Length: 448
Image 1 (cartoon, rainbow, N blue to C red):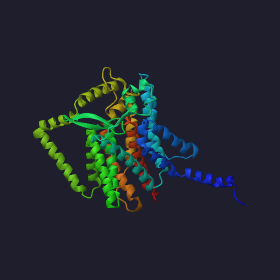
Image 2 (cartoon, helix red, strand yellow):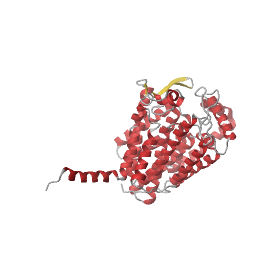
Image 3 (cartoon, rainbow, N blue to C red):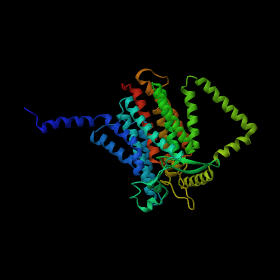
Image 4 (spheres, helix red, strand yellow):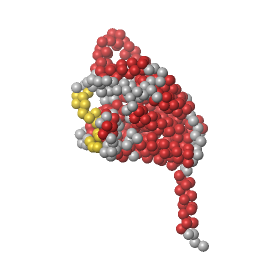
């Protein structure tokens, strides 16, 4: 008896359901979200696609598949931080600011979903490698576009698809304008020299600098783990491309953070770490002695570094003063979001992640925020001794995670992470992968 078309379709449907129930499906979807970053940027939806897509993946995992996630301490602190934000939202004064609060809150929610989903769905190093490569491909495309802009070969400027339907009152704002009109950078001055300041697929050059600075260690990790000279050369070229873009952002804090994190990495895990530590001590001693005898020279160099871009330091000083005063006016739960400074272009609660958290969510939110980072530091700790076998990649990745963590902590002194959804999601993708790697190491479950 031959099968009817209906009988044939049943096993196919069963096979489709089986494939869709595999953990790898979720990993694949997350990876494609990052691979499609250029498309999201052209459409003008890169600030909004993450909450929608990750919420859909979360519903699939926990509502359809009935998955029961294991909450890491970092995830618990993160969701508590979301509660603190909701409480602070009741203290928003300007109605128009509810829109910016909603956008920021949704991005935090999407980041929390990454922290919740990935450690529970990742079953082996193969999953982590796929997501890391997806991220590196997206950042390589962004850096290649930035290089074309620097070389004056292609500097696109156009209205995004989202810009065509945005209400005029949103498109006329600084934030809405950057979504409506797509550019990859702008002409600027550094030490009185003209240059093209790149922001590529990101809203601002400063947040692009942070994204680059936390991606460079991953690319260097890829260089270290590559087993062929051609692969090492390929990843090495990508490292160089990312560094060129970082220089073109003139993100001074991000650049310093990358260097400091690299020194820490060498001092912690390098085969010549003892000599590196001696060099650090000698370097600090030279700086101290120079300051004691030539303090004025160091102060002049430091002032020149801060004032490399005209007006940058003065503008930041005004923002910091207004932000601190606003925090003192409402210290417990904050203002819920950034607020306009009368007669000034930049809002209070910007240009420093730590001050922004204090200003927007008060001491309560800031204390929980610190809890998130303390838990993350503990939950992503590398093994005391490097292991061999199938978990060596996991252990090495965790060691590079310390470099990334330091980059983030230092960069946050002058950059607000949640200003750009893409940078926020990239950062928390990496942290979620580090959480996943630590769990694989502890359980010994990785056999890929």
